[in-house]
Length: 513
Image 1 (cartoon, rainbow, N blue to C red):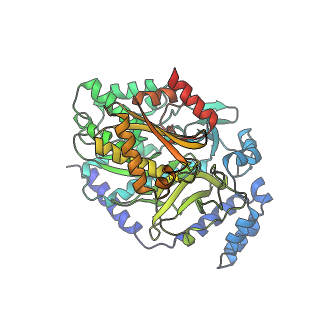
Image 2 (image 1 turned 60 degrees about the vertical axis):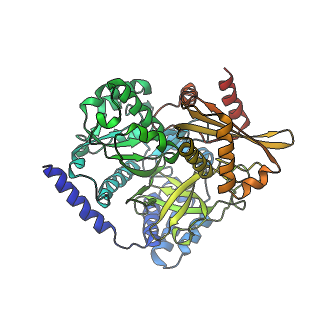
Image 3 (image 1 turned 90 degrees about the vertical axis):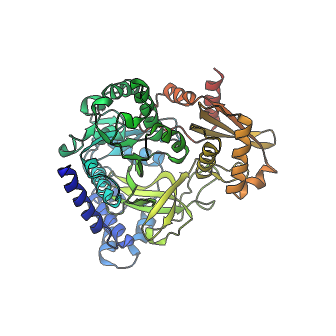
């Protein structure tokens, strides 16, 4: 009998019941903002934008005067503006810039929209906040009633970046997953795989090889990572040991905790590698913080409203964003209690890493406002509207998911290139699969599906959007392209949309080699 597992499961179940009490989202966010303002008021940023004044309004008034002041006194930022005006100082070792003290860690992130690496500050307070949210997520497993007690004693495989960070003068740089994995609580070390030695490996292929060699020695219950890389790892392990599926190696595998990209396009191929069904849990962990996670079955992700992140929501429309997805200087912004279900919003966050009114680049929709539950619909710059078709990443993911099911194929990656062709426009789809499929059949299915799920798309297909093509490529092509850019690893994702001329040329030149 798994005594420890039973005790943990009972404790987790009790904690889950306690966490279900009704909460006032606006009050939680107000308290969060007060804490942020209080701690950062004596920084250069806090002094310039008079955080003391905003904080006093929050403490001594019951209305939203504090939020009006916050919006009026603090400008909105994207990465380039935040770095060029503030973060570059912290990156050079200066103290008390946008958060108290000196920033010791910077997460390297290109996201999925920029070619050059971004340097995102990761403070000690942010590392603690991420660990707290991670623990809350584990505690939320009490809502999953069918999980066996012994699961809580199994290994927890986290496939992320190297924990051996690069020292750059006064700070260290690396993937956020490497930064946080290097700081895991001591009590969690007995569960953590691949362990400190393998986790420090910088070469991604070498790391996957080492994990594969050790896989048979581990009893894994949880896997955490980006779907594409987890799928590649499982295939390597299955091939190495000549087994039918991953459960032949890890019979107690019960949970896949995924994030970074939509899992639905991968699900068809992923489940071919399993011996039986497992539980999927979605997370929203970005380089800027741990924003949301799925708290119970058959739900969407719940925003983390009381752990170092203050959220604002910008209606994703032509009043607030231009045709390239760039935000206007003074957009309309809303608090958590002002949003509406079903409408699309871009996220602004202010955090314990000295991120202030910062456009993270993702778009979301509320599916359950009462529970603060959301789905990620895409990126502010990852959509196609060359002529009014308003094609979102959410639409693209759905089309690929349905195509995978319809043709019973495993589509690993895809990207869509939007371009002008003489006087009209075109969408060129590049689909990565190793299964046999006629490009023309896939093209017709995707085109028909988009006409059904997007009201604007069929109108434009009859007029300005005259060309839609699909090219089928081996899945390896996408990974080889990423490797050529030095973007292998747990947090790197292939962009779903390519719009910039130089990036289109780069991709097409690679394919022509």
